[in-house]
Each structure stands twice: as structure tokens, then as C-alpha cells.
Length: 393
Figure (tube, rainbow, N blue to C red):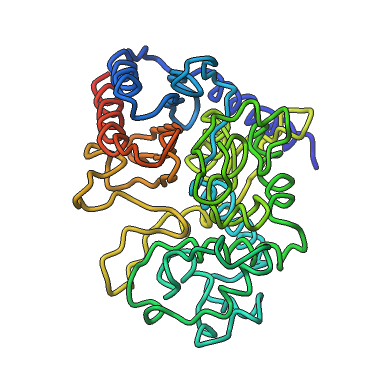
């Protein structure tokens, strides 16, 4: 490499880091957001929470609220971790598939059975990788694997032996089975367990030090408890995956199992808004790397135009849905040019690409039971208020 090119790369790295550290010309007052979250805790929507607001360069607001449980024995801090539930689908599984696609190791139009031959059984031979990512594969939404399966292989065999519940590509049905099979596909292509691949190729380079499957004993102490599982496991779940399918699979699955906190998730979202550029945390010097190309990010974050049904999905991610009996989890004020996802345990992440704003909102709303649904109202209000504050600065 010639000297001038090396110098230019160093200058670019310094500029990128400077922007990443502190570029805000404004001070934002998020007191009203604080009040919304405190009121939600008082109303027992959830005992604890983390909120983070950022742009593509810096964190504007990061705060923790409440306690691990309603006993108020342990306060939530920014180092606390949450069971991400279905955020696993995007922070781990989709990111892994995106990276393999960028490296030319998987084709979106390739049949899943090319990588997992046994998946072809019972009419599934033409289901593609893209079908799994778009949730239009035809697979069922959910199956009670914990009632019939005793291992990861049992779960995989059950899915592979299932037929389709509707014709592939003709509609949308959000399905854990799609994400489970994507996790299996990553493992078949890489020869690594999903958690090992994600740790090595995603979390470590991005500096996501508090993101992992199957927390160890020390890490479990950082995890907010989710639900008392009186139906199957007979215990309070803390640092142990809430999702039953992921539990049967040993805590590592494409649909659930990941634990993390808001500031770690921001590292992933910042990379996406920066079109794949990130500061590699595994290098000693100032080194800007490319996680995937900007073309790959656009491919994964753009809704396909050739679906013949109402669709809000990009590849792995969701976008702003139409109002239904429930309000949009991202709120009504977010732009149409957004992407995000939610998790059953009370977690969510959304990015408004027009405003260049990221909102990570994590709670343990299923503690001590999944019957608490107040988050359906408070989450849209929080996102609306954040966008109002950010837009009016």
C-alpha cells in the first residue's frame, strides 16, 4: 500500500471516530420520555427498562429505569441485560445471513433444501432463503415443540417433516419456524454453531461485549428475570431463554435466545445506518472496516415490490405497519422509511432512516407473567414523543 493511501485511510478513520464520539450541536430534553417510562413502571407494565436514542454517529440519550422485579431489590443499570426474544431474529440471525450473502456464500433465491436437504420433504422443496426471510414460506407460525421434542435435532426434524400451511409466496405469516431454519442454514454453511459464528463474525468485531446466547453464571446476575414458567419448567427464568423452542434447542436458536443491552444493540444499528462502515473493535489501531457492502444493506432493508399481498417486511426486518386493533409499535410519527423489530419479552428496536434516528427500548414486560400488555400502548407513545423532541430541536 502506498504512503498517501495509508495517510488518507488514517485521516478517514480519525474523522469517523470523531463523528462517532460527539457531533451533536443540540441538547435534547427527554424529561417527558422519562415521565412516560416512570408512569409505565408505576402502572406495572414492566418492572425495569432501558431506553437509548441515537443517530448514526452518537448516543443522544441512554438511561435505565426501575428494578429487576417489583420487589425493588435491585436497580436496572446500563450494564443490565435483557432476554431479547425475537430481536434475536434480526440482531443475530438476519445479520448472519446478510454477511454470508455479502460474501457470496448463500443466495437469496437458492432453495433452502440446497443447504438443508432434509427440509425438502412434504412439498417444501421450492422454498427459498428469501421466503424464510420474508416470512412467506408457507410454514406454520408456531408449534409447541416443548410438548414433543427433547433436543435441537428433534425440533429440526419436526420442521423438516412438516408440510406447508399455505402456498409459498402467496401471503405473509410471521413464523418462528422460518427463523429457526435460517439459524440451521447458517450452521450448515459455516460449519459453526450459530452462537459461535455470531460471536466471532458479528458481536466481537462490532464491539458488542454484552451480547450472547446462554449467559454464564456471572452474566445471569446481570439479566432481568422474565416469567415464572409454571406450565413447563416450574421456575422463574433469569438468564435462561424465555422462548420454549429455543430452550428445547439448548438456548441457541435462530428465533430467540440472545441476551443483550441497549448500548450493544446500538452498535449494530449504527453500522446499518452507516451503510456497513464501523470501527473494528478487534484492532488496536484506528481501523474502519466494512461489515457488508452498502448494496447488501439496501437489499436487506428494502421491501420487495413483487409481492402480490400486503407486505411490510424487508429481509428479516419489519417496517411501519398499517394500524390494526393494536397501535404500531414504532408509533405513528416515525417515517415510512424505517425498519425495526419487536420481541415478545418486551423488547424493540426501530430506526427512522429519513431522520437518522435510532430508538432501542428494552423491558421485561413478561415479569412475572406474560399477561401484562400495557406495553402495547406505552411503546408507541414513547416513540412518538422521542421523534417529536428530536424533530422540534
